[in-house]
Image 1 (tube, one colour):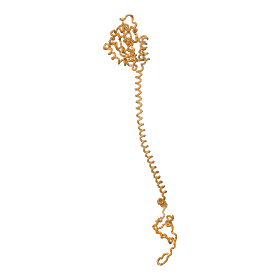
Image 2: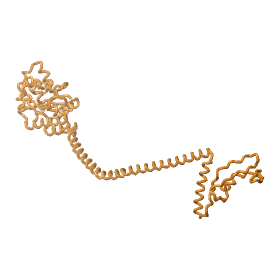
Image 3: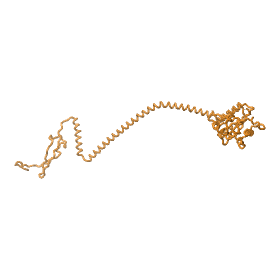
Image 4: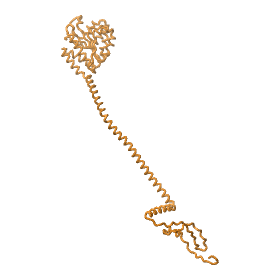
Length: 375
């Protein structure tokens, strides 16, 4: 009760209105106030209560005009957005943390998806880049095969021709073996009418030299007073050539070395005789000394080294001598053409050789005696 203008007025206390009753939005009612602000004053429900302080005015949304369905949808979206803003501001801390992690997960998923897409695109680009050289390589290989195949065929043809020529050459080198040597000696025995035993001595002696790779000497005896010189020397040349091919069967064109009286005259010492024919004997395997009785005593000691069976001057070599027994007529008795008779004949011819050297010399020179005086 207070006094106003001289009159007393009684104040009846009432209950205070709720806060939510003042905001139509919180009541979910369409009532909207047209004024931007509305001042209210709390009524005192008790005399002893103090007057409440005036609160700040609450803004009220204006009543929206009627809109179409499209506007309604847009409005709903804006309302939802506003609601989310309000809720985000008024939501508790746990809800905000959950929203934070949800945003982080969303960003991680999108970033991981972007990385996957970038990786896939890079792999595709790389595969495309690698496919281009592969296709180019296939094209180049196809072009190269057109040229490589003819070149390979041509090279194979050349190799075949060269190999054929080389094999033919080797065949011509290697065809003269023991069987061919034996066949040739048999044919010569029939052609020149040489005794089988004499040809057997030649065949056995040359084959032994080939097997043991040592040296050996052969003396072919003839009588110049009762023989056909042309026939005899043809026989000697043929048998020497056959023996040379057998001992050096790496070529069919090998020819034996011949030492005759014309060459003997030009040689001054036995040392010169050794050095002059040693290399050629090493190549051919046979040295033919025609008419050994014409070799002077000063050169005779060279045959001591050529005919050494145990320490030969040239390995796998045969020394063929021809001896005219008519030069040994000074010897008493009928010639038997054995080792003793041939040694005495040569000892008489080489009287100038020292006595201590003549015996070893004759032992080496008089090896295999082949009697062909019937020619």
